[in-house]
Every structure is written in C-alpha cells, then in structure tokens.
Length: 336
Ligand code: DAH
Image 1 (tube, rainbow, N blue to C red):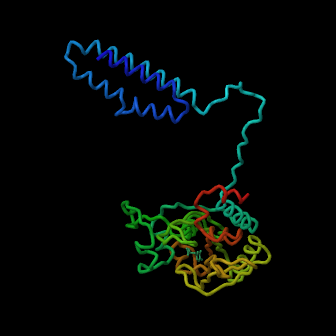
Image 2 (cartoon, helix red, strand yellow):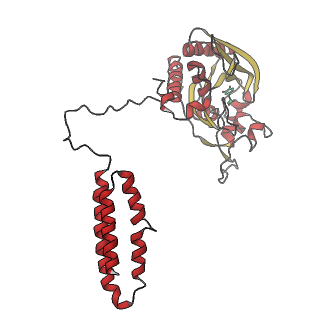
C-alpha cells in the first residue's frame, strides 16, 4: 500500500513538472486532485485496510497529499496571469476616474423646475405611497373611473387608513395638489415633480413607473389665459423657440374645462407621429376646492401635469422610453 502510494506520488510529481502551460496544469489537476482523481480515489482505499495498518498508511497518505498539493500550488503560480516582476512605478499617472453625469430624468426635472421657479413657482413634494383619497376621491374622481381599477393601479396590501381609504402607489402627481391646498391658503403656486406608478404594458412610450411634474396655481382672478400663457412660455423655454404647442379639449375629473397639450418640434417625430401628447391641464374644478375647503366662489386656479420621460424624449430625440431605464452608460453619458 505504502509503496503504491510512493509510486503514485512520484508519477504525479513527474507529470506535473512536465506540464508546459496552464492548460496542462489544469488537466493534471483534474487527473490527480479532482473528486474522482487518482489521489482521492487512492485515499478512499485506506478506509478499507485492516484497522492496525490504517494509522501508518493514513500518515503517509497525508504527507503525500501535502507534497503534491504544494507542488501544484507552486506550479500554478508559475502560469498565473501576473507575470511581470517589475517593481511598481509610483510616478505613473493614476487610472482616470470617469465623472458621473446626472441621470437624464433628473436633469430634465431640474430644468423644468428651474423654468417654473423663474415664473415664481415653489417646489412641492408628496409621498409615492398614498391613499385613494389623495389619488382619487379628493380629485373628484368617481368610484367607477377606470384608473381606480386594480388592473390600472397598484394597490398596497396594507390596512386601510382610518377613513377606510386603501393605500396605493400613486398613479399621478396630482395628489400633491390636494396636499398643497390642505396645508396653505391661496395664493398657491407650486410645481411638484415625482415618480408615479401604473399597470401599463411596457412599450416604447409606457413603463410601469414614470415621472410627472404637476403644477397648481390658485389665486383671485386666475383665468384660462394664464394657463395658456404659462404653458406656451414653458415649452418654448424648455425645448426651443421652434416648439409648437396645441391645446386639445379633453376630460379630467379634477379640471373643468380640461385640455391635453400636444407638442411638436421641427424635424422630430415620435413613433412616426409629429405630435406627442405631453401634458394634461385645465381650470381647477370647483368640486376639488370644496374638498379642501377653499372658497370656490372666490378663488379660481389652473393645474397641469406632464410626463418627464416624454419631455426628455422630445428634447433629446430619444425614440424609446426603455433606453432611459436600461442604465447603459453609453446611452446615459450622452446627457451632460
Ligand atoms: N394627472 C393627470 C394624468 O396623470 C395629468 C393631469 C391632467 C394633471 C390635468 C393635471 C391636470 O394637473 O390639470 O394623466
């Protein structure tokens, strides 16, 4: 037995010494050291020896194993990728660390907010997990409105709030309108950027989450002319003087009258379409004022909500929303 072991060891070391490259060393390892390799298989046999012979054989076997694995480690080192033994040169320039850029979504939000700040708007925020009250009821959205359906909105599996309202991932930033009006009397002039969630099929212009920027102005004597002027100014500032904007009559539960704003830019098309729907807006519905105890006979206001990703797509000529979230630096680092 011990002689056999000696022979196996010599054979292994000779073959190892002859291995001429990393592949040969690996083949050698598989042959001798892997689970079904010659050495482990041999060592298994020791267990079958008569009891008196086992201690001596075990000792010899351990020694052989150590010698072989030491030789293997040394040989492996020889072919490892670190081949240079030159001393380090501390005067070499360091590896450049690339500057990060702000994500195109945040760049877009910042730009939009900046423009509105110049017009005197303040920044407001609200929670992404909110109740149906803020997302629907207070916004005059009836119980049978499709957006309230479980297929359209993500409801959170949590106990209802004390008024029995369910929790959800907000489907629009319009929730912040209500929060703003609850916490301050008019005049109110806010913009509220943030993330929203919907159960949309993912495609070139839809995701399950996206960003909106909400706006709300409430004061004495606010008219539709203020809304139109504000929106037109904004889009020309944001995209460029060649931007065209059109207002299309629409319906939103919380504004009356309501419009959709479409925008086009010379030379740019989106999925082959010239006009891209970019925002909703309208005059605050008196029913909404009633929900937050603002005197609807005295005050009027306008509100708007727009999609940040779509603004970014139009501004930069991006043709697929999904690019924005793939986190491919080749794409993202274009936006400085
Ligand atoms: N919340 C609407 C949406 O998600 C957008 C919107 C439309 C916001 C009209 C408004 C508004 O403030 O007045 O589709």
